[in-house]
Amino acid sequence: MGWVTGTVQERKQWTDRLFSLRIDADVEPFVAGQFNRLRMEIDGELVGRPYSYVNAPDERPLDFYMITVPDGPLSNRLVQLEPGDTVELMPRATGFFTLNEIPDGRDLWLLSTGTGIGPFLSILKTDEPWERFENIRLVHAVRHAEELTYQDTIAGFSERDAQRFQYIPFVSREAHPGAIQGRITTALSEGELEAQAGIDFAPEHSQVMLCGNPDMVSDTQALLRERGLQKNRRRKPGHLTTESYW
Image 1 (tube, rainbow, N blue to C red):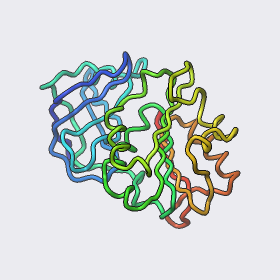
Image 2: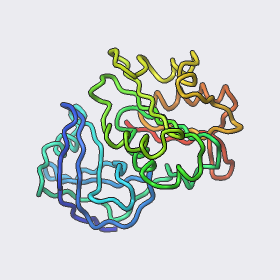
Image 3: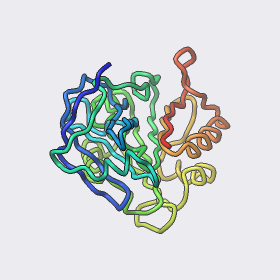
Image 4: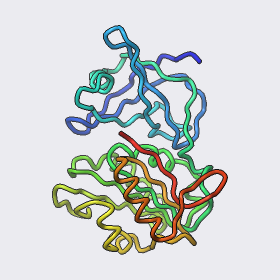
């Protein structure tokens, strides 16, 4: 399958390491939660890496949320791109971190760290979660408050349905108004997360999507399995659906 050329429309620098690229490219329709691959030639070698869509399927330009990785050849090149520069993408998205892979439930939990919030923003920009779930909780854990990005987008979800939607930020390394200080796993173990959310985790009514740091994903899964929630599989539907970013 060939690659297509995308043209950068905007680079949004959130912090010294976090940035978003908005790209115009002729790609095939995708499902919210899926990812593409971005590729560039670096020192004579083609280097590609997967990045989830942040934009909804019907939104343009395409939006990708990224972090520069120390000694990461691609991320350190992407962060230098300016409007008008080009980058290659796959024409077709892939991935199964999508709502059509998830059973019905009363509550939808979206637990993320860092750039792992990206696919959840894409999903929440579509009608499906609002039509299928009574309660939606978006959890975003970061180290520093400046990393709580896409606040305008998140505010739009609250405006859409403030009774159904709640945003719960975590900041681990400093106190920040409105945020829980610490880690998701600690707040889950101590009951603080559920108290803040006003709903609990239970196999009878919870669907949980986890995206981000592999340690958060695995440790949170382990805690939730103790509550009776099971890994969601196509052949055996469950409650926990995961995507690791590293």
